[in-house]
Picture 1: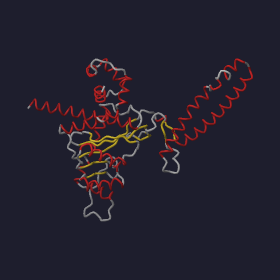
Picture 2: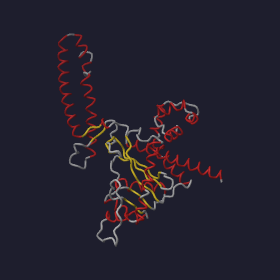
Picture 3: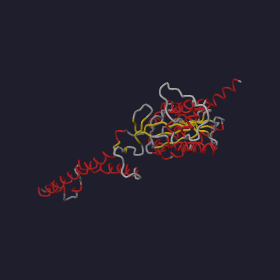
Picture 4: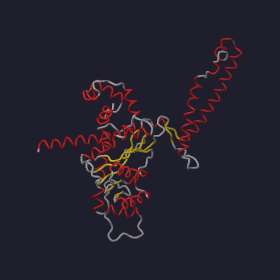
Length: 378
């Protein structure tokens, strides 16, 4: 099962049903499955049951890449991408609409209960046949189909409302536009790189420059990248045991908190952060750094902006896109990882780390193949 999942996630065959079909008509899958054809339910249950262990393959893939000399942890890039959740945004409802809908459903239930009570009272007085249907044999507890549907729907509305209220517990009242999704309550409406709003998770990754190996991977329910700066660099340090020399991050991570954290990280761990303080327009060039000493009263943001205008700063930051963005592209295309299959934050995190692990395995496989070819031709 592990071999099937690793090979499937590496080659873009992630659906349990698709893996089952491949075990019948694909030679590679048949070989890995020892010519067996496990049922898709068995594959799905295995993946869900052992998700934590499968996600642990990520650190193993990273350590393998380090043993092969593929990870230098000199310069790394941190970025995030929106992965589509296994839920439709049309299954989400705003807090304001939830309240209105809940009140509407409660009113409809009250009307239908009154109607049902009237029907039962009339049935009691009509004849024995109707008595048998509504009262005598206990079927008076059976609800009309219309009432039954609404009574089942009401708890879902109340659960979604409770979720939004719990997330906004620090505020006086949730915003009317705050939303909850019935299919995957942990997922959120987020704007992707194309400007479209999708039901998604925010996948984060730290990538080493040497061979584009992922050194840290996580998933958050926050549409903003900013809260992930410290956590992701800490995870990369923990996974590799080495703090990076330089960290390249875009303007999505720029905040006063992160600028202060970057200054502290440079002093404590020697990691020099190059953080964009704003986005450039189309064809807009970075202005040159002003001459002279930096004013003593300059803010951390002004100091960082000045740093990125220097020649060393421009040269370092210009590598950011080339380091991290191809990784996201490879995961989306080669591994068919644009949409997550598992629901819930834990499921999304485990699947993203499995995708990152398989990306690292692909890099290691090609590195070993290239090295072997070079040795053979030497």
